[in-house]
Length: 177
Image (cartoon, rainbow, N blue to C red; front, top):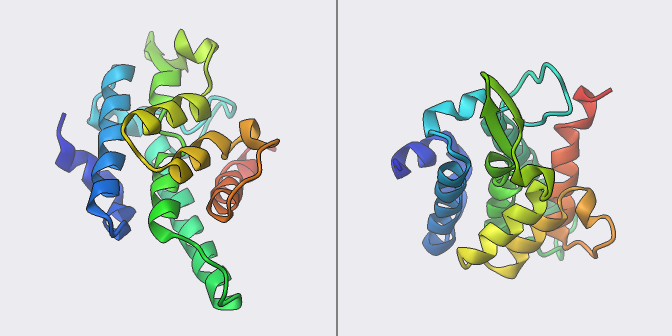
């Protein structure tokens, strides 16, 4: 697995100030790529969702867009509310990993991306949360991954998780109408 290639496709990774968290984010992506049977070069062929027949952006673009929007929202909120605490390392890591397990939820069959066998039983928020926990990421990041989608609708989301949830849907709902 070429770690440098993984690092190069996520430009906001360098904004995580804690090297330990940064390295674990890369390790999660490396494991998901390997377990899903993908190559880093193939990630441009992985749609960010299977719910939109002709998705215009891929998983990497979606992940980068969600991360950029989450950072922007967090910075704006902090400028409006000086006492609001947002951990930017947690936020950025959570944004970069929110869909990491889609590489295990999806499979390649006859030139198409389809639900994998495990994807029939386990959606990416749960698989991604388990992967992040396995790699020793903080519970706050595991929480963001596990609660960013409908699976988190009954959870009490942290501020960082709320931001990621909305950034994700801002990058989904307009294309799914």
